[in-house]
Image 1 (cartoon, helix red, strand yellow):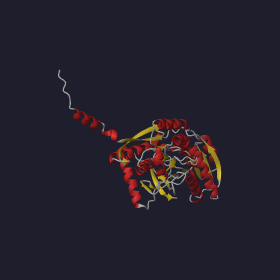
Image 2 (cartoon, rainbow, N blue to C red):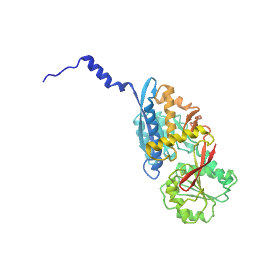
Image 3 (spheres, rainbow, N blue to C red):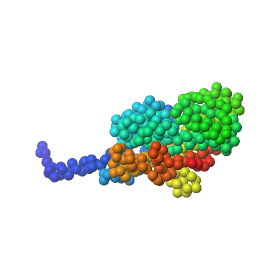
Image 4 (cartoon, helix red, strand yellow):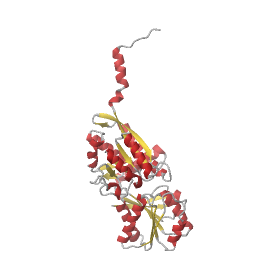
Length: 383
């Protein structure tokens, strides 16, 4: 059999064509959230926000330092567990990611932040609200939502001033997030001249609250605050109904999800639940509202699911990180990190984002919500 030899020039052209992508750069973005366990629906919501951002960036053909960038998402599940969270963080560091979006929970974000800091890798959390997250002096740590000092304190003031709460009970799930936001709520109540009559605790895997709710019922509360997540808040609301506790039920962003009515199995009275999302846009800002509605429509089309809470913040966080890379002309963490830290006036779907010297969002918004039937309603934005 005769073997036909290709001319050397033709071979060279074929080789160049086959390796044209070698001229591009691969940018690896890590994302961590609990995609298993009781709040997997929230973790998946966050991850989908990252996937949508990555898909759009690749479709745009972003260039960084003159090279076309191909973005890859490395998604990890931390199950909301601190140990699994640090293992996930180390895995991403070993994979030499260019940056990390996450984690969802404060309890996993805080220990993971040291690992990213030691490796010099920027981390933006879209949803960790415990104040300690940005108070460890790490230059790599950022968040795009208000912290629990603002969130818990605002809810505490609201309970006293707006709901006229006279007898307020507080429960938390002992996580970094749940206990932190409950502590700040209690401070807000006392600072507004209110009174807490009970402080109880459970855990983030609990399903039976009969003992603590029976104890609270004896105090005749008009407001019950829960520091924790919707997977625990739903069954708690069901058991409150069974025990005849008709108090207003308050909580932070952890309970402020689209799934809460389902988790409560139809036991929520209209306007009984009041919660705060650590972010949000003012209904008076027509352009911002339109951007958010556009995002929600794209998200629904792409994933056949409604936004839960934080996918828009993930989307913004990832785009902010890439914008810093583009401005710095490099995806190397050490080169774009100083640019990221100086982010000022970034127009995202969740509003305008600027970072202070701790990595916190400046002038962070809170959106107060309630529920009618199975639909979340908007009470308003406060800052």
